[in-house]
Length: 201
Image 1 (cartoon, helix red, strand yellow):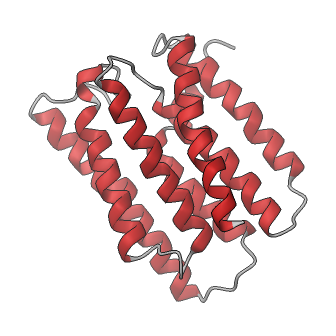
Image 2 (tube, helix red, strand yellow; image 1 turned 90 degrees about the vertical axis):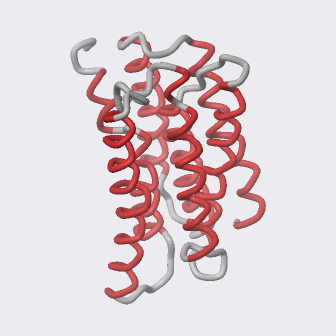
């Protein structure tokens, strides 16, 4: 099992969370979108939250600012977190607006809040688990979509609750975090999303 657990750290890396959130938004939100709207939506998410961060990662690694995509060193986390906040801010202000994609807008807004909290923790030398921020936020978002659209997705939500445990176990197995850092990361992802549910439900 220990050999399998690191898979969850890579498969559920935080860089994939915006894309996963968009996928479940399209899957569970009871709104009709044209094929063109779907295409534009996913292209925006892929370019801004995946391709651009990957490009910046290789740039930062070239200049010796980052060693690994897992960002194990506290000093290596500040620039990626600021970049993440900036890119999500562009999305929620320019394209994924509350008027056009309400639920997804607030999911990304919650992501900005979580990233900002994680960034502030760095100044206290606390390395909140970004993996746990991502998976816990995604779990709440899927639960919220289920409530909003009155869908019975209990099995899907339960599956993601289990994934939270697997991701946490994976990070422990890889010696990437302590229990405290995992708990802080979990709460950083969970609480902003819960707080925003009242706005969009």
